[in-house]
Image 1: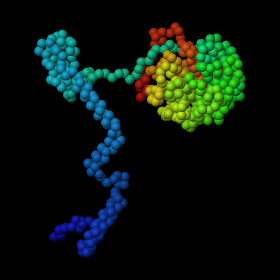
Image 2 (image 1 turned 60 degrees about the horizontal axis):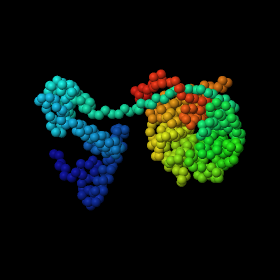
Image 3 (image 1 turned 90 degrees about the vertical axis):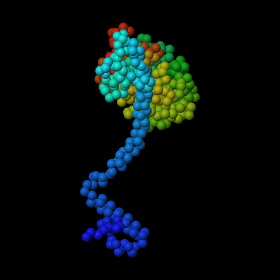
Image 4 (image 1 turned 180 degrees about the vertical axis):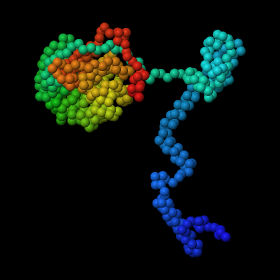
Length: 493
């Protein structure tokens, strides 16, 4: 006969005999039970047949863990999807709840029921045609499972706006003048506010003044002992500012054509400089990872913008906040508060070094250029707007005119002309090196528009300055926009 088990403790294999347990106090019994269970658990873990798989878990526990994880990681997304579904349902409920009059014997739908007029087979009928015929058509409530009803629902819902904006037409640009005169790479260019002449600086350590109309050389300024990397003409003073790889920032008096001030402080080569449009302030940036603000007249350093971790490649100024924007080889763009000298915002969207910036003349926006993309930003908070994709090269310069034409120039000699609003590249030009130069010297280092926006000047590695203008004879019919959004979408996504 089999013995009946009165105590569940007897079912545990390896447990001590009853007479041993009975003599022990209650606390010892519990401690012994826990010890035995732990020992069994270790044995099960040790001799479990498959170490890769954990012990089986009940299905309810598994579902609970999954739901908690889903809510924790994707709770915001799930919430937005549910809100979008509710909004769609409300849109459908907001559709006209009664069918229009269809002549004699027409039927009016009950309140709260969305109806569509069909021909009996599920196809949507034109209400005007049916009213002309004077025939009564059956009314089928929406929300069923048939495909015809789904198509009806889609046709009644408002269509979404197109994702891509159609670009504005711009006349194609063409090369009309090549100016030779420098004996080294031309690294900087700027146009005078009266639009009568422009200045260039090069690796030959010389700043040259050229007549804008004829392209003839007017003046050469010598004083730098290394390559001139930046040239800017003040819009409110008869001053020209220059910076070079000799760490010097010079202020030239254009009435006497002499250097009247030096701004000492940078520890490495000057990369770019910018003149504030409304204050007597000059901002320079250099390879020492800083941008410095100078009082134009006293030569005193007002601020040192330290925050970038690599060469600061470009700087631009404007009258509204943020008044100073810098771009660096550390792949960031920083916006600075000129009053406190601190960084207001850091834009980290770029993946590679940012070498060029441009501010739109009329819109409160700016663009930054990197080998990965040209990105547009909205000021003052630096909100990302869109990418200008397609110029796959190291972009050294960006320029924008009043008409919304953005030009990017690259190390390989390519120029891309973009429409600002749509981000569409409407023209590409490959510059030709000067005879006697090798093909690898086709780089574009600097560029700018003149004050009318109808002349575009580039400073290039073949020691020349090239000038471009829009084709006056071109029309929208003779040079149509080759705009194929479906192809662009396939390439992008």
